Length: 363
Image (cartoon, rainbow, N blue to C red; front, side):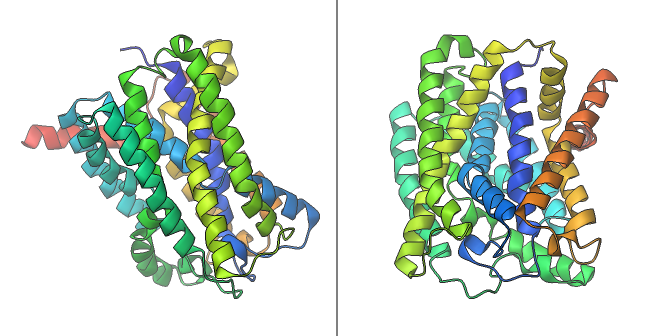
């Protein structure tokens, strides 16, 4: 069956945002301020941190959830269930060995919820998604309400120079990821709704909807994210728990709109580009191999940033680490395109298919 361009193009582009969001977590060895971001002094680092927090932070993963739910809603339930269990296994191994902020396990669990969501009426999806935004605001507000004291509160494994000690800490840190990304549930519900209407499969039939979602969604995300971006950049000074909680709640809730807006924007872009364009094919190839490319980012980041490897996370600022993140994403795009031209799947996708086949043959 021929693959659809829009979802693959969206996933490939999304991984650039994921790289930017995840790389900032690797900054360490300095005082931490608002949103557990390192306190920086350089103008360029302040500028980049503002851009990343305002446009990417808490905006990339809702887009990921929307695309994931859209795909799951199109699949047979039995196929989804087996895939979800293996995503949880992959997620645990990813968290244990590389990155405690792993989302594969979370999306494996989310996949089971999406199966149930496919039986909900449209009205139920919108009502529950709206209520879920309230829960998102509450949890995000509480998570960041404590005034920063310069110490790191999350993902302490990034601070240790002992690789075995870091490995022991990572699984426990991984269990807290759902609290930090609780908002993706609302985005997933919208993914189910969009799948029923083939919004990404036939974007030409939904131009008006996509334009509205892209325009309003991204605008809301930027307006809601800018205060946090200014606070991280040291321009806006907030210190009271109520101020910090309000800032975090606003940032998280508007991030859902941003994730949907970015997905809609890429769908509109897919209508204006040629599928045989070399750049488009390369980014889509990355999206088709998104699992491998996502894991590739973690391998590169661990090799470069953590204390027990090259330790660049202690010396680079937001600008430097963002540049490395984008170069890493570009490298994954080029590698994915090379695999496409050879007619090969990504190694992680091939492994996932193999274990699922083995599981099926043993039943």
